[in-house]
Amino acid sequence: MHYFQFHRRELHAEGLPISRLAKAVGTPVYLYSHQTLVRHFNAFDRAFSALPHLTCYSVKANSNLALLRIFSRLGGGFDIVSGGELFRVLRAGADPRRIVFSGVGKTEAEIEAALRAGILLLNVESIPELELLSRVARRLKLRARISFRLNPDINPRSHPYLTTGTPENKFGIDIKEALSVYRRAARLPYVEPAGIDCHIGSQITSIRPFVAVLKKLKNLVSRLQRMGICISYLDLGGGLGITYRDESPPHPDEYARAVGKELRGFSGSQSPGGITLILEPGRVIVGNAGILVARVLYSKKVGRKEFVITDAGMNDLIRPALYDSYHEIIPVRPRGGPRKKVDVVGPICESGDFLARDRKLPPLKAGDLIAIMGAGAYGFSMSSNYNSRPRAAEVLVRGNRFTVIRRREIPADLVRGEVIPRGLDP
Image (cartoon, rainbow, N blue to C red; front, top):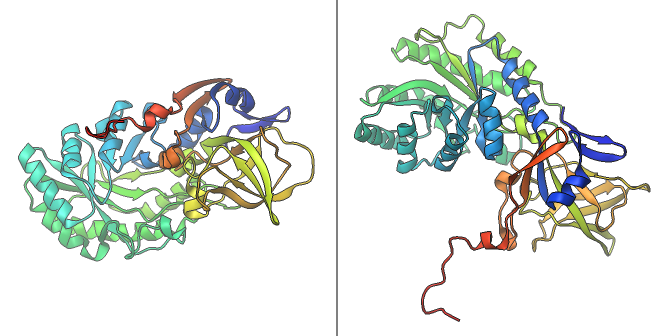
């Protein structure tokens, strides 16, 4: 459930009319509902309350500092994939002992920063990475607690670009090699293998792939235990889907029940505290907690095609162009009249610059506001300055008040850091 609803024939964000906010801040603008963010995080976290667990929000979904602070205050940890995300979560006040660091291409500087910060786990994805991490830990004389991210060869049947757990993907280490890599890590003096990590994909709408992964990981934990390697953390990753159109993803309660049932009677780890589950929700927390508001600039007809041109484009929300993904589009103040089939497009000089194609919508005229729904995840975080367009503002709504949590970029931001060499003076 989200808190973007109609009142008196106008779409509101919680208690705030969106037209009023757009007048004050301008468009395009990302709006996030504080009440929805809190509700979604708590719904996921409480679903696993019967199991020792840590809910590590996946920062790549939306990395705004205000959202990170909200989740930190709710007791959440963080799943990061870069040194920049480490910087962000620490700036937002995160407890380093509740941070896990994933990613196939960690640099030496990123590994060093993570070890100095004292994060909970580094999720190692290759033998060369393990060797680099060992050298850095030895140089710093700091113990590196690690998991190996394992590739379980399970296809969750989501979009091919969102699948991460098959041999065709770049992520992780083949699960068949798990015993040998853990044995190798256990011999390194400054490395402590303490967990197992697995992530099979994103926008998954079935429980079955998660249960299949858990079965494989349980077997592996038992074998490692017999080798004398103590596993304290079992990271099941993220990937639980949301409703964009007609999907029927499972509720977190259903997911938690399935995980709990599979773990029932499992002896787990040799460590005194047993095994702690690590969960990395991202989209399921923020996806439907955010919308992108745009203004109609023009309508035009080309042959049999009708286009609605808005001030938001693929640089603001790339998911439709990248994944051919569906986002519901709702007029903020719907007009009467028959729906007609249109392409909703942006101002970018690319044929792939669209927000919707062949979509039946109510009449739209220049100046009208539209809300692109389900844009809280992988919306602003994947936006760019393509065509030298300043990035949109981000706004957090609480009740009938709002705060600009990222100001709209201005033209000067587009050239910040650029230098014209001497000799090229006008």
